[in-house]
Amino acid sequence: MTLADLYSMMPIVITGGGALIVLLCGPLLQARSVSWISVVISGSAGVWAAFTPPALTPSFPGVAFTPLAQFLIPLFCLSAALTLLFSHGYNERRGILGEEYPATILFGLFAMCLLPCATNLLVLFLALESIAFAFYILVTMDLNRVESGEAGLKYLLMGAVAAAFTAFGFALIFAGSGTMALAGALAATGNRVIISAGWGMVIVGIAFKLSLVPAHLWTPDVYQGAPAPVAAFLSTSSKVSAAALLLILLAFSPPLAELRAPLYALSLLSMVLGNLAALLQSNIKRMLAYSSIAHMGYLTLALLTGTREGYAAVLLYGAIYTAMNLAAFGAIASLSLDAERDQIADYSGLGFTAPLRGGVLALAMLALAGIPPTAGFIGKFFIFYSAIRGGEMTLAIIGIVSAAASAYFYLKVVVHLYMHRSNAAPPAPTPAAESLALCCASLFILGLGVFPAPLMRIVDAAMR
Amino acid sequence: MSVPLSHVLILASVLFAMGLGCVVAWRANVIMMLIGIEIMLNAVMLTFVGGSAHWGIADGQLFALMIMALTSAEVSLALAMVVYLHRRKGSVNTDDFDSMKG
Image (cartoon, rainbow over all chains, first blue to last red; front, top):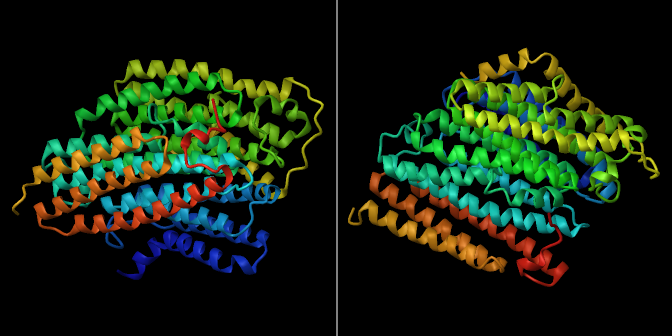
């Protein structure tokens, strides 16, 4: 290990060390400074990763700063920083006290930074599980609402079963190939039957993490029970990291014909059932949960093609989806006062009484629906384009139709925001931190919708 | 090695299926679900140790040790939540944890 290796590992060191520092120094500082220190830590880790040239040789056993990591770490750090900005005011209003909250977010971020760097199955599995552990705690963090604790327990029990599936899959891949290194283990040179069985188990585990139908049942409850900023972080970074894990595994293995059928079924069911179930929801967080199931179905569709274009579309969509969902959940968090603003009907008239937050929520909804000037359109366009180029015509058409149907429930929120009046008192003015975070997310959505070329160049570099 | 890999894998698969069965059948009780998950993870560890012995490398044993650490963290987290919810609701029955529907 040389100094250069240490430099390339700095994002992981900064987030891990930062989490410990926040935990140790938290009791001595004010909540405001703890929040700001955490934002600075995640921001600096992201900036460091963005400006460090990637290296292909492992810096530590099992960990290498790959081009994929150079793309994903800044994305995760950005979403953690925005989540922390949303959380500060929300936690103050809700009485979620203590430095455990920012420290747990940083621990989760640490594991997320580690995941794309992994070069063997052990590090990959530990990173995946550490992310999940951080979220089990974060979901349960709101002690004032009983839903929060219930959601945490449900998430943990289902997550533990999924972890057992993933671990069994890794165990079978190891037993079949005789090596733990990703490049060797997935090359399918060993016992093909055992490795295929292992892949099946891994797909089941990842389907849970990505909340693909039929392993989606936890999603609506967890999103509803979790504090809104946690739901923002959970629906973006945790999902993108699970997709990245599948991407890493698929990229290392030769094309496997037996994977097509399960991925096809998962993608089809998620797109159709996710969008249909979202039509029926009156609770905005549950609606967004079902919408995220459908969006992960689109991601799976792009993964299914197995082409370089498809994988690039996954990364692009991951980044865009992060911005869209952070904006949506951030606006919800910011509009929720001492009680969650849960029902879609509660948002009536907020486009006028809270112009910034209402506007950002409307923009996020339009982006999730895939309306052209926003980034959501670019993301969907490349997913379906790569699917059609990859030969998945039927599934792409089903996806496009279900995406068109999904516009109904997204626009319902916009209609409530701008076309209904309500006599409720206007919400309190937006705190500066939340306005900043909301503006960042909306700039990202609009900027990428108009100028997608820079991000596509970055994605292309990450694929190398 | 005296025990062939296939025997280990068959035993591990049966154990895994039994653990999964436990989780699915005793869905009503959180403690039983945790026990089922433990059994599933034991099957995983068995597979790793068997694979390591078959190939003559220690990586799998290392993974098994890590899973032990992970399991203990998981159980402590789960039990903390169970104790907290038991204090609030006076029950460890999952049927009573029904405040969210839809």
